[in-house]
Image (cartoon, rainbow, N blue to C red; front, side):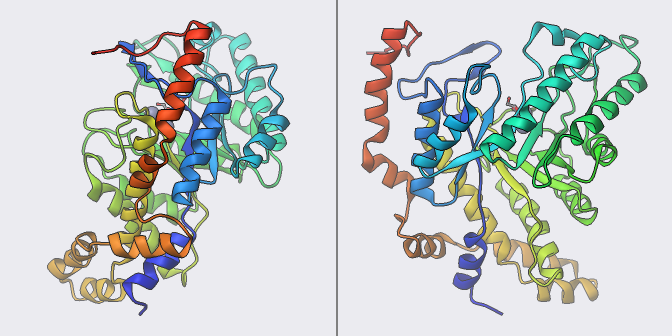
Length: 399
Ligand code: AOS
Ligand code: ZN
Ligand code: ZN
């Protein structure tokens, strides 16, 4: 068995996590938005921030983009891709927007209106093409579709509309592209959501075609749901496509990963490491992505905190002694089995991760390194000025 330091080194070498463009800009709740001086204003700012995070962490080479918020009809995707490349990153998952246009009032591909369904499908196909131009692997689908009242629409008819649209979309994928199908139990639909849980995403993805997989957003479950069991089942069925990482206390809170329940994320990672160990160290291809809105925390600090937490929990989960676990399970020794997990979770991996960072020429602590660069202060000064010139609302001054 390799030493903890070697294990940490090995697993972190192949661990990549994608940051979301929307995590760098001002976002809010449905009650309002609080502005931050250093928040990104446009796509150039978002790319610069994502590149800065990658420079400090060495494990965030791609940035997820949102079509509409990042790419408008006039945007030249090839230019965006080369801008990203010049900064040392690339465009990651493409996220279509199937929920903001007025036409989507009753849904997108699930809408009873053919006009809305056609527009939604055309938009998904455009996003697939955009992915081909930018060299992105994943087109990540989240649907706000659903109904608010019993009887509003036929649940089965909506299911069929989804199946038809995703099958059609799948036909447009290039060989190296994947379609990720996300689920969410409620919000904005409050009676019935068309893709409400992993089973619905699973069946819809299966019917769409072999390049479609399920995306697990850690905030998209009912309270107390066992997410690692879902992960284990999806792994076993070769249907786990990726994650949207965040944490939650109540609903889809989009809080910092591990801020509420780090053991939950550890248990998810444990299922992945165990799966790979059983296959002789062969890890499945999984897109690890962050989906958070940093409404109150400084954006870049929140992103760095998230990435570091993900690395820490991924490293800890890799330290589970799988042989000892298997032996304890075979004997029916519940306490020893559980202790295998607890022991790994309680291991301090700070030095091991710092050693990994040093071997990559990175500072031991990306957050401290970020603060030392003065990047946020410079961005705040420049972006505040630009906001004023553009007439965009700015933060409240308590002074
Ligand atoms: C919405 O709740 C989902 O988590 C989406 O994945 C995500 O927040 C969205 O795609 C960003 O627009
Ligand atoms: Zn999500
Ligand atoms: Zn969400």
